[in-house]
Image (cartoon, rainbow, N blue to C red):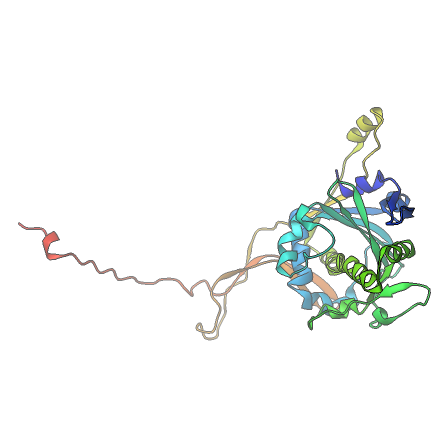
Length: 330
């Protein structure tokens, strides 16, 4: 089952604290109405999820240099992916250590709400737990891509935190436009169950870190989405399936767009022209990537680059030697 359908069927979330009291906390069920009303829902396949992850973390210079072009595609949309598709890159960039059990490699998703400009709003993060049920992150990601100091904006009535990376990174420019707001019921629950302020601080920190890698991923998806030729979309056709499900008393599945890579043939780059062949690169394969041209983003599909003549063997000399005992005797 897709995560969006699991969210659509979610029950209200209750949890018991250490003192035995039952608490109703924000959960996936609180987003059912908004999820159903969303004008578009994206479901990324593994290949497109891996591509977006690579764009977010391997090409982070391009991502952060294009923040002025970043706009979310709708005032409300859902996107989901399999952690399997991005696990290799998340592990490579040391983003796997979180409260979210990525060893399960289940599905994860995000519900995004934005203003008309597509540059301000908030994001709720979901993932599939070990039982297959959807969990909601206690933190909401708030963003304002026109405010480079948004991570420092405080509100005395809200529990908000900015994210400062441990090492210098171009991604800090993206996180400067973002802050993380802990939902009040979750803050009260964490505080009630913490024995010390240090324990509360540690719990909050681990909760925040569990979604730290999602914002660059979502932002990169929206950039790739705006570049022509990178992705292709197939609308779901669930009419017959939903008719059968409704006949059996089951709920209908939600429509969505399946997102996959645009698999063009590998193109040549024309080879090296002029110049010293010694300084020209050998023929090699270049993966697809984003290219910025002025105020627009374009997708450069995978291609061959370099001089095909370099590295070729023009002549070869073979010397054969035999021992005296192996020589032919007439």
